Length: 372
Image (tube, rainbow, N blue to C red; front, top):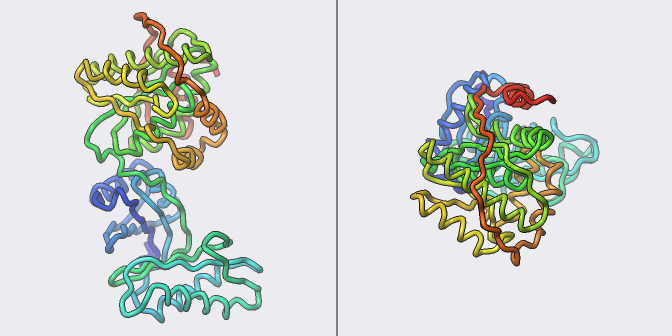
């Protein structure tokens, strides 16, 4: 393992007070992925990981929440001239003809100003790369980002930069929540439940064979981010609902009843509802919340405020092709809809357990005995 080339993790704002737990999660995800790693150390606000294969290790860590950035970086001493020299050398190896670059530094300067470091490194890169016409870009427009993290003792010149999923640290709430995937929007709700630090039990409600195949392909994108090597999924086959607003409300009311029953059986305290008050009538949301409170459980609405960051996360975990359906559902007008009287409905329930692997979709559908 090269000691000067490391995988460096920059915690998100909501993970800065949970660094030790984030380190434990990093160890856990690397063990789940069977990746070798050496020492994991803290350097001011950074977590540094020694790894045989930095590319695979950084990809595995990118599955975790509570991370702002993951980078592969060269570790050097916190000295102005040394940093400028290394940025010039590393940047020159990365730049191609005609590319625009942007130098960004962050952290604790010792005897110099961070802005001066950025300017000096930019100047050195311009001089060294005149022959290939590489030019400085802007913070919003560049081809290559040259990132520098400066701690009290060291500096890290980044060779590769990957954006993290943000949020808080996986399972940091110390509470378990149950959520249901029944469409694209509810899948994003489950993703957001995990992002907010809850250990999550996944339940799937489907109507037809085609529907369950579609839902399994969606949840396959969520499973690697649950920080488990073995997964338990609970499936419920429910009756078919229409697309009109009354049926949407009735379906969610039924799903809430299913979630309550499963939460009781599994001694789970929190129930995650995919019923944002920005889409659903407030009286309807309150009715579901009161129903959950009445049985001694706590309703949780992760999507109470929907913004572009949630859709961005959905894209980053490979749910790009479902975004249009999520956006379409967000525009649905349910505010004047009324909930029909609910009836007790029996569902076909099946629980499956399996180890995460390369063919999770096939494993799940085979366990459900569904042709695909």
